[in-house]
Structures are given as structure tokens and as C-alpha cells.
Amino acid sequence: MKIGVLALQGAFSEHMKMLQRLGVTAVDVRLPEQLEGLDGLIIPGGESTTIGKLARTYGLMEPLRLFAQEKALWGTCAGMIFMAKGISSSSAGKDQPLLGIMDIEVERNAFGRQVDSFEVDLDVPALNNGYVKPFPAVFIRAPRLLGVKGTASVLATLPDGTAVAAQQGKWLVTSFHPELTGDGRFHAYFLKLAEGSS
Ligand code: GLN
Image (tube, rainbow, N blue to C red):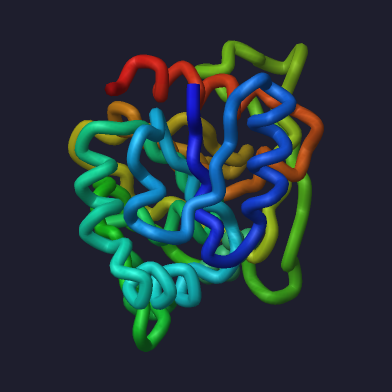
């Protein structure tokens, strides 16, 4: 199993470490040709406007869309924004290239300036964890899901009902950063999606 991590900007090395810990070959991806032979790709957190502009500069936009048609893709935080079809106009950057593949609408920086980062124990039914083993979710200037449409479905919500993780086929998005915790269950879940594609 070989998984790529888009390494244009942001928290990519933490994802690579987690993948290696799970026994997977992790490849940092900066150019279109590096997508070849991968079973899946993670788009990390960081700054979604910067990731989008760099992806455009490096000619990655179309290759990434083509890759996603067949393979598993997971966007964490900024990566989730980049994968979305829609972004609330008030939160969108002036020049914000989006892959625009997943049937979700997001709002950037949805938790306000006062609360830049926080950690919450999440029940994620897809991980089968419940209250016995909640997932420690770290939010950093995080987006939230405003709309989850088509064949996409919500995987996790905050106690107030705010949707913060979703799946559409082999595409996964999380508002939070599983790579910053010692908990590999979300990565293991993504690896299962990647195994099923190809
Ligand atoms: N606030 C960033 C953005 O809008 C995302 C933050 C993150 O990825 N931790 O792109």
C-alpha cells in the first residue's frame, strides 16, 4: 500500500509519520507525475488559499481531479476546504482555487477568532468507537460543513449538531487534525477506503 501526502504547504509531515507508523509507504507529492502508482492521497491542513494557488501553479488541479475519480482522497481541515464544491461566499478567499469534487459546502474559520483551537472528544459511529473510546479531535482555525449533499454523508458532529466529518464513496473530509493526535484510527479507516479503490 502506497499513500501520497500533498506536500505543498501545511501539516504534511505529521500525516507521513502516522502512515509510516501504520506500516504504509508514505510519499510526499509536489508534482503531477508523483501521483502515479499511489493507492490514495491525503491533502493536509494548512492554508487552503495557499494550497490551492500552489496546486494551480504546479499544474496539479486537473491531475488531482482525475486521480480522485479512481482513488481514495482525504482532506483534513484546509484539505477539506480544497475538496469542496462550495464555500460560503463570506468566508472564501479572493483568489481561492478549489478542486470542487465533493458534494459539500464549507465555511472557513467557522469557530471565530476567539476560539482559534480546541479539542473535543468525538463519537464517530463509522469508527465504531462510541463513548467508550471517543476520538480526540483537534480543531485549528477549522472549517465546518454547512451542507452535505448527493451521496455524501455526515460521519461526525459536535454536540451542538455542527457537522465536522463526511464521506462520499472513497472520499473523506475532516474539519479536524487526526494526524496531530497519537490516535491512528482515522488513518486506518482511510487505508480501508484506499484498499477498496484501484
Ligand atoms: N483556516 C485555514 C483555511 O481556511 C484552515 C486551517 C487548518 O487547516 N488548520 O484554509
